[in-house]
Amino acid sequence: MRTRSLSYWLFLGPALLALFLVVFLPLLLGTYYSFTTWNGIKTGEFVGFSNYITAIQDQRFLNSLWFTTKFSIASIILINFIGLSLALIVTSYIKSSNLLRTVFFMPNLIGGLILGFIWQFIFTKVFSSVGQMIGMESLQGWLSTTETGFWGLVILMSWQMSGYVMVIYIAYLQGISQELIEASHVDGATPLQRFRYVIFPLVAPAFTVSMFLTLSNSFKLYDQNLSLTNGGPANSTEMVAMEIYKTAFTTNAFAYAQAKAIIFFIVVAFITLIQVYFNKRREVQL
Image 1 (cartoon, helix red, strand yellow):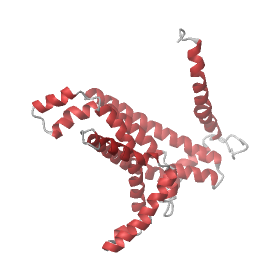
Image 2: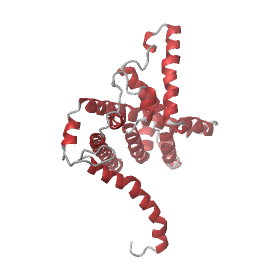
Image 3: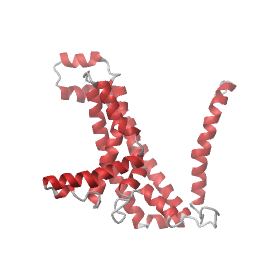
């Protein structure tokens, strides 16, 4: 580090400064405010862990955390399965592969709020009309129950992020040596055996990256939750980000909301680091 030239630090300095001002400084201040009676303007008095104790006893917060966890598990599985499947399709040397890559990636370019309103129309209007036409009551009244609201959010998230994850898998699939694939052909490996013993171990790093991205994005979801269900019915589809937002800006309990945000940050960081650790170990074993 001592041998770095002055130009190196001149170029790196603005990025480090921005990172400190945008990420680390707000985190430090937010942690401090969570131990006070901060009301958004004045810091107030120091109350210790009072906000944290109240947060872990708040049933609404715990319910939203459990709902977010279930949603994240379902979304991670579906997104990675669909993303890898799409990547295998578009790298199979079909004529329209470039067009398909563009089509599959396009949902990721749509804003979260707009995407939520689009799918809200699909679930409430299109599904209802189709259900009436074919006589299926299960397609009518979507987003009006906790279960359908849950799967509506999972479908929306999977549809949006699968194309993005597909690009990550494509990058690793294209890096696989064709000699290995041809050797597996010569050895008489079936397509399933080829995928299990040749392809998947070589794209394991892509799985680690995709797991990290889908996990963090699923837990932090807010805009799609707002536009699709707004937490209804009766806050049963309210995710943690929305619950914290409402605590801060609806009840004006900013310090309490900040304590919830710190707890949420710790939970997400812990889960993320654990999955990265185990996936990295699995890469070595593969």
